Image (tube, rainbow, N blue to C red; front, side, top):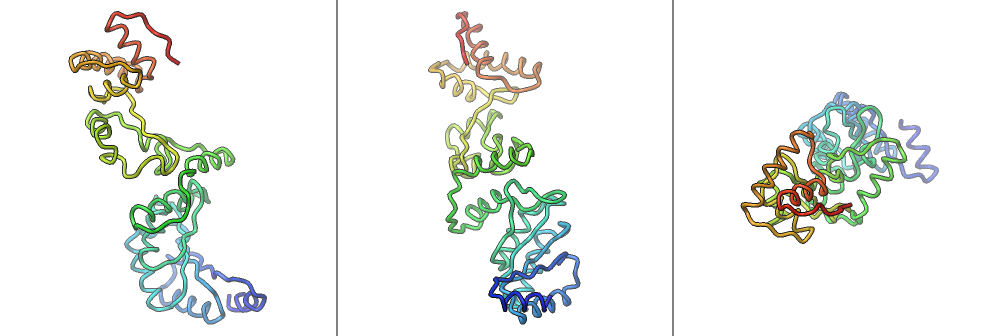
Length: 263
């Protein structure tokens, strides 16, 4: 490692020394390795949680000790084998790491790596970092990468999944209508999404009224309750939320109106 770093620096290259499987390395040996890398001219060290075995608390403690022992920039390279890649990357940054290795949608070997979109938005909203990235295109970027990699983007994907800002439960829908921040931690436009209210077995009358109001239909509470009863019955039968067309059909049938064409 020392010879490689010295040669690279001689050639004028920026060097990040890779500490492979750092999480399972003896800590004294790891710190000595980092000291030797710095002495050889390395610009930063890459801390690799190669098989994703550390918890955020362990990462925070270890990176803190490394920073105290060696004054060198640190990059977090975290894997998602236990679903903690993003949390570990953030913990490392809180402990003093300067960089985070990320991939769009968390693509990577085995269970993947820390997701770009998750790390950026966590730094922005949880750690209150002043992020320069224009995040409004994150959803578009993630869709592009999902299509290019032939990896489906789940609706429940943190930050950019279509379900992240979707509300069905009666209490949640009512709260989101009155104040979106009640159940939305940030404006969905920040990542290129919009809030959605879906109508199904968990809905309440507030959701029914709001959805129908999108079609310039105003109903009273009693009517909303009657329609909601039918909505829940149909939703249970179909085992899914209703489409707007299905909700409107129930409304027209209840009010004895001719069913209108809804796309």
